Image 1 (spheres, one colour):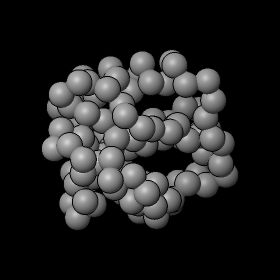
Image 2: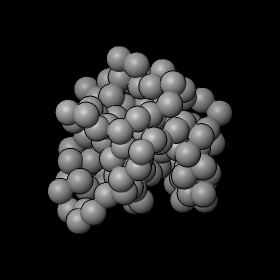
Image 3: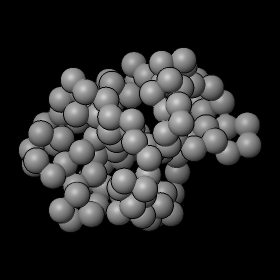
Image 4: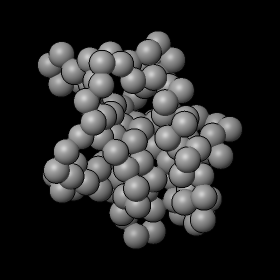
Length: 113
């Protein structure tokens, strides 16, 4: 897990994008931080390694969108077969580090394998 990062467009995974929008609408709160880093993404994903590897249809992802002066990062584990986010979190932050910014350059969606 996490040996490979795939930068992709959301059009490659339209069902994931739909699942993320549903997840966002159902979640009552999000975490708000001053800065969020690539290392924090990796830590979050590593703590869910068992869930990620429990099914070949599970994929780890981050989706980054900029809203005015803040970034919204959705980080999660998504199952392609049942089209559902099994675990996820929404982070609102004023800043992201360069490594995370680079991962998402020209790509809203990043898949972590």
